[in-house]
Image (tube, rainbow, N blue to C red):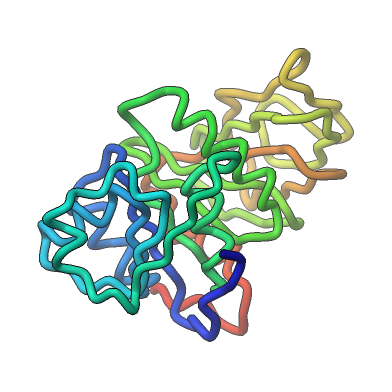
Length: 227
C-alpha cells in the first residue's frame, strides 16, 4: 500500500521492535505525540498501554495476542519484502517531524538498514534515537548552538561534499565517502556550528542530550512544538 496519514501537525513517533527505553519513548511523544507501531514495536506499545494511531509492517514480528487487541481500522499491512518496515512506515508519516525509537541496538544489520533509509528518504525530517546518540540526514543548511567540546560526527553513505564551520577539524569543501574520508568524532570549537552538504548522503550524529535542538532545526513547519 502506498498512502500517507496526513495532517499530523504535531509530529509522529515511530516505535520499532529494537532497543528502546520508556524514557526515550516518553520524551519522543512529548514532541511528536502521534504514535505509529512498526511491526514488533506494536508489542511494546500495547505492553505500555499506549494509544496507537497506526500499526504497519509485514507483521512477521507482531505477536498474535497484540494483533488481536488492535482495532483493524488502524492496521496497515505493507508486505513488500524489498523494503524494510522502517522505510515503509516513513512513507506513511506525513508530518513536520518524525522521531524514531526502537530502531537501534540489537541487530547490527537492522541498524545499518535504518541509516540507509535516512538517505533514501532524505526529504523526511526523521531522527533516529539511540541509547547514547541521535542520527539524522543532513538535507538542508542547519545551524546548531552546541557547547564547546560537544562530539559531532559526520558519516557519509555516498560521495558528498560537506560545508561547515565551528568544528575542530575543518570540513568546509571536503569530499566525504564511505570508502574514503569520514568525519567521526569531530568536536565543536565555536558556536553556532553551521553545516550543509552538496547532495544527499551525509548523516549527522550527536549526543542524545541534543535531541530537542535537533527537532527544532529539522522541524518542517511554522514552529517546533518543543521547549
